[in-house]
Amino acid sequence: MQKPSRRTLLRAPFAAAGAGLLAACSGSGSEPTSGPQYTAGTAAFVPQGPRGYVNPSDPEVLAAERKRGSGPVRMIKFTAAKSMLDLGGRSVHSWAYNESVPGPLVRVTAGDVLSLTLSNQLPEKTTLHAHGVRLRCDMDGVPDLTQPPIAPGTDFIYRFVASHPGTYLLHSHVGMQPDRALYAPFVVDDPKEPLAYDQEWVVVLDDWVDDISGSNPEQVLDQLKPGGSMGMDMGMGMGPGRGSPSPHGSAHAHASASPAASPSKSKSKSKSKKPMGPDRVLRNSHSQLLHGEGGNVAYPHYLANGRLRTDPSVFRCRPGDRVRIRLINAGSETAFRVALGGHAMTVTHTDGYPVQHKKTDALLVGMAERYDVLVTAKDGVFPLVALAEGKKGKALAILRTDKGRNLPAPDVRPAELDREIVPARRLLPAESVAMDDRVPDRDLRIRITGTMQKYDWGFDHKTYDVRERHAVRAGERVRLTLINATDMWHPMHLHGHTFSVGGISSEGARKDTTIVLPHRKLVLDFDADNPGLWMLHCHNQYHSESGMMTVLGYKR
Image (cartoon, rainbow, N blue to C red):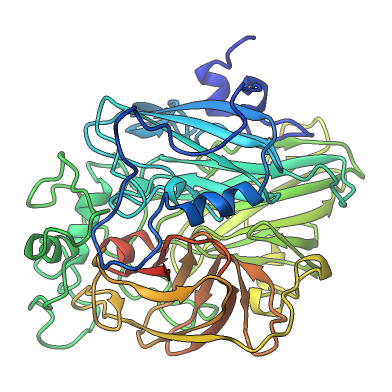
């Protein structure tokens, strides 16, 4: 079978009508089971931490995976390596999967076993996380919690049942690597798809800083921290004392004090002690939708399907076609306000789970959130604009049904961006995925803490330590209350589970990532039905890398 060329990978708009780019490279394997491929004589990985918890490869995990069944094995290979990438007229050096940005679309059918070999050709350790997928714990890709990180020059096979259809995201879970090009869209098709549509358009959004005027994500993180050469102590009106680091102010400092802490925070070997790139700290950002600052990183570019708005990707269809758009925010520090000029959108799914259909003009998509929408294409050329919320800049892609040559200007702003925006909290789950109304067996209350001045993001005034656990037990209905005691918004993600947003009556949409606004609380209900050790963290990569991560563990 012909292998797609690098140019095809770089240019592909991820349009699909039933088959993904890599689905054709998949095949049926002889081994129907899923799970890690251990070398003879080696034992399953056991992380540091207290006893009495279910470890990533324990029998309870294997039993939960068996219940998911097993179908054909779809075999795929990603190579993570230094790459020269074409962003649409601008070439950059970065790290990528299979030399493309985004990485190639991975597509399977619900019930299939995905066998993805990750070959690490990077200069440092890495992992891969299947974001939003309810999978077996030892395939979750959290370094030093669910697996040892993958050393340079070695491979690791991620093998699990993709049991639930939906739109997902594959990305590295080590340090600032996700703020390069180490991400790819992942679609699990429903063999009994209830939606009727003619075309499909996968749109992956990103904020981009790597190799722009000498910048890289590690340098930007250093700028944000106290004492950074261009950091948060250069203004922003944050008051006195902002140059003094907090006891929890640096995840790397925390790790040096405790060898078991911050295992996912692998420093880049290329990181210098003093940032050499330009100042990327964003000052005086504001978003009414986010009730405060939009973010702290001034990205020079925003991408839609790996392309700058000056040379956007174009999706072609016919007038009257019903188009399913799968929107994925792969950004590290930017929420996007998204609208398709001249069209209303009907929201059908969020984070892979169906909702009661809801019309809207625009959507606010936080980092790692996904939304599926339906539109009926009109005749003409229309801009799909992703406005960087609270920041300057936007990403652009084009839907067109005619044969003309003219495209919308790069700075186009559809009126729909300023019309109705339906927040996730107003979406209701489809009946097929609604949680039953049940009294919680356990209440967990976690405070989101930290400040921009000290950049000491964490939970309950603590930064991440792999040895700490928030205990739950299998079979429980858990009510998780997140109390945002900070001046920033945070997209919170729970691994291995979906939750009902809103709690109280369990009527909220099913999600795995959701925005918690500043000085607000959010109540999330979930069923403890996937044993193991699971990360809860902010999906602002700069926040999580600074310590805003913790672990929910299943007690025996």
